[in-house]
Image 1 (cartoon, rainbow, N blue to C red):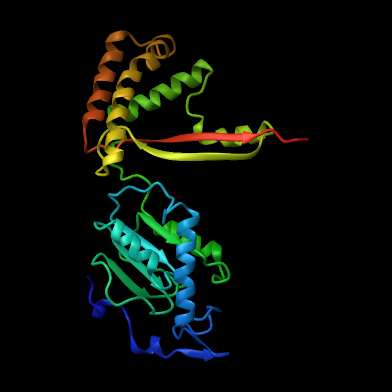
Image 2: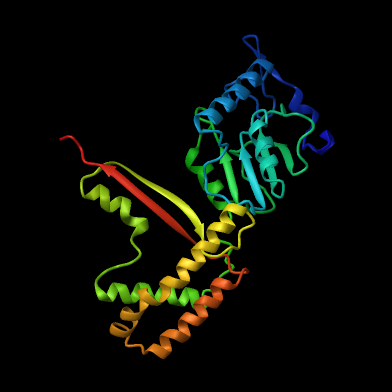
Length: 288
């Protein structure tokens, strides 16, 4: 557990403002219209439990890996979400910020609370793999700037472990190019929701799941999924490319097998964190 002395606090943040019988934050006083007293803290904790029930026990919905290094919680309130998240991700360094220092004194070792205003210029020493914020409606003056800062402080969605000149990357480029020249494009998934909506469907949903193509993740479920994905992927390489590469790219079988050998080697390389995004798109035909 973390000692309270590790909190980034000064005495001035406890010089609370009092108004209408309620207590309000001192840091950047007046910027946030809700109180921070014990009554409000109880409400915030109850609100957290409500959303946990609403989302079937989940405290996050993004498809993040157990291997993430850094996470940030903006407007953390009592810190209840950040504490639960830090417990679930013990190898992740979690920073949680708020205008009020109302969080508990002893928390998981991997969690650091900071008194800060999310609308100030962010000064973190590193980027984050996951940034969380919730129930901040009515709290932020400039949402576009806040979201831009979140974007600027996020690490890219990939760890760039797969070199762009790898056999796998080259194969995907060649296959997409050959399919396009053949007149039947392969890489449509990211645009399929838009296409379905343009066809007239309503209430269109695009459910996305990130899936590893080899057993590189530490998470047991994802590791098992990755093993199956690698088997299916390895078995899919030849049937997908044989006709396209010979008919369209004018390759011979020797060239194809040499390329596929490199791809299979990449799929066995656990230093290459190869993954894909699966899309499940569905919609309704309107009544009129």
